[in-house]
Image (cartoon, rainbow, N blue to C red):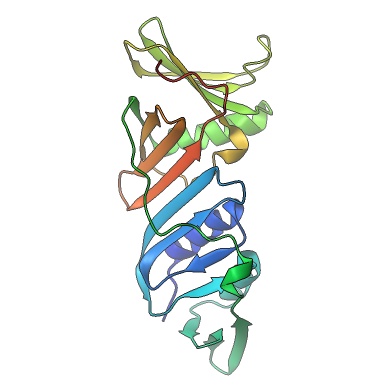
Length: 220
């Protein structure tokens, strides 16, 4: 079996959320942060024929990318990665010692919806780095919804702002920038009254559920 670049990109992203992962049989990968505030699922082109646990995903990725065009074989106790006469063996972890994602999705209610392009996702990440912003906020007020990357607790702090649509609702959805860990792409975004943000890729079966900060005000 070969592991595609797209799948490696998903796994690299998931490693930023949690270095543990349980890969189940089939073609759906999922992960959850240790704090249970980031949950992600992605369908990939490969089909895994057995379930196995990985304790340190970064070390596995390092081996998978060390050689180009690597052949991957899933054994009973380990993964074998080989090319020509070179071979690596990576042993599975005990599933009981890792934090694994549930094998399900989360129902989403559509309190407020908007769209983010890949360029806008990239800008959010760049802006957060430039202004050292701790918070991504989506605020509905006076008929407009505005996305802000900054520090809402400091009125005169540097910030990036963008009007993302019209709304007749009043709300203040706050997401810690450190939890905005998504593969850059085009997304349909939903803010839920259950205080999470759902991002669904417009081109792939990739979804993220990101918990909002407790002081967010949604509905009511």
